[in-house]
Length: 342
Image (cartoon, rainbow, N blue to C red; front, side, top):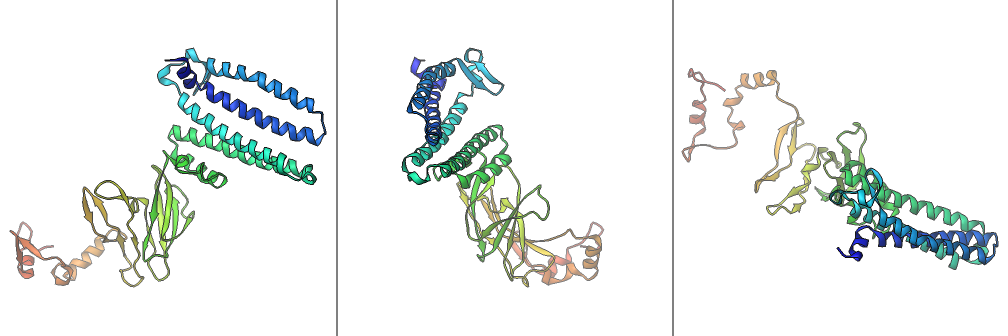
């Protein structure tokens, strides 16, 4: 491996860039503070010189030491097969980006703010901007750590909180990669309000997602959710997130609208189960009782000759490929003793 490749592997170049950007941020902050107290220009020149002297030490440190899950170790003591330098590189990139944003903000305040606003208000603006960006940058590193640990639920919750504070470039698919999936949500008819609830949440803790159709709703990978659909004049529907995460014959995700029935269409004790695709076979929606049939209900059905009521038999009887009349088929419903059954 060449010396340049080894420098890249040990993140020496990234550390150098991060150090220069950090020095820039420090210089901008100190420059604003010294300007408020009208300090001589020689002070800032001395500080810049000291920061410049620290760059070689930072690079030597990056060459000799490596960050590991157990802490800081000499590079020679780290097993190459267990090295986490790629993860460290990604974190350095995020840290550098965050510091660049801070530096640009400080530079803009210092260069473009009118002179009459350069006193106390400047400090307030800088503090708010710095704290906000610093916090968001720290959370990006934490999200990356949780993703590496496989803690998808915690990473998802933190990303949801951080995303509104980030730019569009930072809050793209890379932020959510590895611990989330997304899907559109539709209903038939549309206009239904959709609520979401983690499986381990309290019964009354529901999050409103909006009104259908919804675009790119995100879920934590491997976590279970309940979804609730409500539309005036229609039966409320509750189901699992697996009802909307379906795939076509080629394995590509597809969105199937959730059917909402008017309140007077289905019997009160029945619900619609959405259809699905399994082993390249499409299964249509079907209906199911909300609760299991009790022995008393079954006894009542038999007592009123439920099995002998032709209206309950929707499909035709077929034997050896030929249709069998209903009367003939029912007459053969006998047990081993020859007694008519169910």
